[in-house]
Length: 273
Image (cartoon, rainbow, N blue to C red; front, top):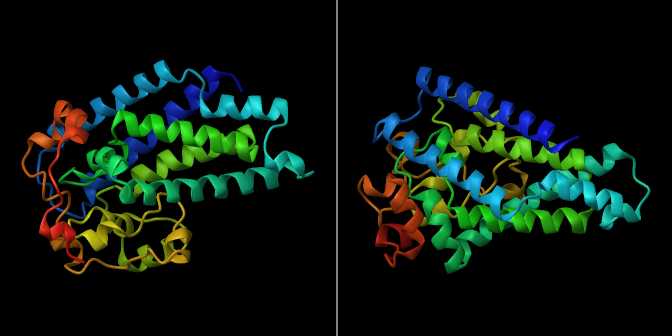
């Protein structure tokens, strides 16, 4: 697969999922918005575009390209075994998802990483664009970690392509302001992180923020006991965002970029468990 083909496929799927989730949010919203969609989307999508440009400038190779080099050189643990391609793909996709889970846990546990990750959590509303809202430095660090894991693991290029598409699509889905039927949600979250499940992670209550870290597969939260079924105040009354960053300014692109430099501490509401 050429770089142009990869970019075309990924862009097409990205736009398709973005539009689909946005339409569903409009037809069946879960929570009332705090700010207008145009205001938030303009800034969140501008940050997304900036992140794409920064990554392409700093790291010219894509994750799939790194996997192709790894395959040619036979680098990585999976190349030590005579596995069929489908097994390599399955193991690699699940392993990379586990890596993202641990990366997410670390981003909440270590101060310097939390400073960057606060950009994602400072959104007062949560919708499809929140799943794209990350600081450029966090995106770069995540990409470097992912590439190192791909080489170490020996992930097949198709596995990396599948993982990248799934991670992007499920991040937009589980951040969506979507009102799924409760029974369907309970069944779906056995195999996929749902919006109601992940929305708890964006609560202003610290013990709720430090739960439901999964982006794609929910199994890691079940296994490592970071799963929380419901917020204490319920989905409708649960407050979203970081209480130490109130107001609309934190939704603006310039403020988001400078947010890691802020020395504001977590408030009592955020600290109490």
